[in-house]
Every structure is written in structure tokens, then in C-alpha cells.
Length: 234
Ligand SMILES: Nc1nc2c(ncn2[C@@H]2O[C@H](COP(=O)(O)OP(=O)(O)OP(=O)(O)O)[C@@H](O)[C@H]2O)c(=O)[nH]1
Ligand SMILES: [Mg+2]
Image 1 (cartoon, rainbow, N blue to C red):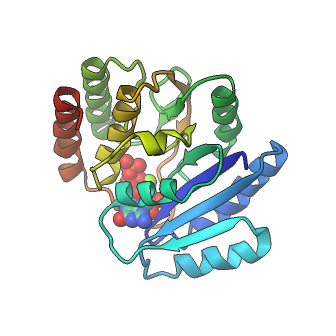
Image 2 (tube, rainbow, N blue to C red):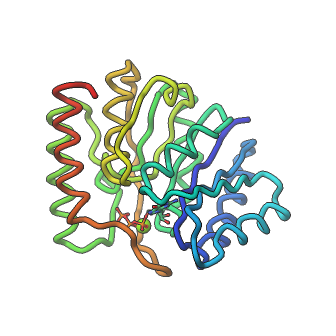
């Protein structure tokens, strides 16, 4: 199998069907054999039931329901550990990531990269997040790049692809989305997966459903975790 796409969901009933439909179309056009792994934390809005119904249409969708709700990062990791594809690609499940970038990520990994991040801040990338949010995110990313020495501009976006073997070589402890996403890149690099690059992506804020990200908690947590990993490796 070429690709496992990991999709964490928490109350994404309004988004999951259109996302799956567009992903399946892109995967088919690119002739990639695939599975979609939906990691749902007992959403109250029926997300998991929709995902299971979608599997009767496509046949390549695994729905994993976790009974703990300990963060989007923990949900990502659970999905990674259940992935069987040569390449793992993770995304948000709220249609904010552009599915058309997926084949480019796969091509880069097949060309020899270990980890390819879709960056909102690379040249030709963009985001429609608020100016305040963007400034904080930009500065945070510059800080993380400087202390880690990894030359990419977006450490906290969920949209990235990597060789599956990396999962066995890194041990992540962050549970929330942003810190975990940063931690995975820094630890992959420290484990010797140093061929890390980025492609530009256009990121659009969700149209449906509500954000679960609590920036007040995520910003300091990501900052301190980046310092800890750089100093101790753990
Ligand atoms: N399984 C699971 N998924 C989650 C959890 N929290 C968030 N997610 C999913 O993770 C993805 C990102 O979460 P969002 O709520 O969209 O966060 P966001 O505000 O878009 O975050 P930013 O993109 O950083 O602004 C979405 O697909 C969510 O459904 C969680 O606790 N468990
Ligand atoms: Mg989102």
C-alpha cells in the first residue's frame, strides 16, 4: 500500500463526507493505493457513523474510536500506529487543507525526502487566519526553526507526509495538537531523518463546525516542549 491518510476527528460530521470524497478522488487520479484512518474520540455528532457508512462506498476506510479524549496529538499518534502504508500523510479533517497537495508530498518522499511538511508560510503558501494569530504563529515557527536547526517554516500544521518507519523510531509524549506536531518533526530529525523539506500550501479556516484548538494553552506548551526537546531530546 502506498499511502495511509490519518484524519483525527472531533465533531466533524459537517466536514468528513466532503473531505473523504475529495481525498478519494485525488488518490484515484494519482493512482495511489491507500487507506484512510479516521481517529474519532467519541464525537457526539455522529462523525464515526458517517465514516463507517463512507467505507461501504469506498472500502478503504478504517474508523478507530478512542474512548479517551486527550487531544488531537494523541489521536494523530494513534492513527500513525495503525497505519500500514509506506507513506503516512496526516491532515486536519475540517477541509482546511488542500487535498490537491497530497500527490506532491508523495512525489517528494518517493524522491528521497523523509518528511515533507505543507507550509502556510513557504513562498506561494498562504493562510486566512487572523493577523494576530499569524504573527504569533510565524514568530513561534522562526524560534523553533532557529533552536532546532530545521529549515522549514511551519512546525505546527497537521498537513505533512513521512516514511512510516519514522513512527517506530520516535517517542512522542505531547498530547495536544500543536505541541505534538512540532515534537514529531524535532524527534524525527534527532533520530536521523534529516531529509526534511516543505512545499507551499494554501490553508483555509474551517467553514463548518467549531475549532477545538485552545491557543492560550497551545502556545506556551509548544514553546516549552520545543526547548525541552532541544535541551534533553525527550
Ligand atoms: N480525535 C480527535 N480529534 C481532534 C481533537 N481535537 C481536535 N481534533 C481534530 O483535529 C483537527 C484540528 O483541530 P481543529 O479544531 O480544526 O483545530 P484548529 O483550530 O483548526 O487548529 P489550527 O488549525 O491550529 O487553528 C480537526 O480535524 C479536529 O476535528 C481530539 O481531541 N481528538
Ligand atoms: Mg482546523
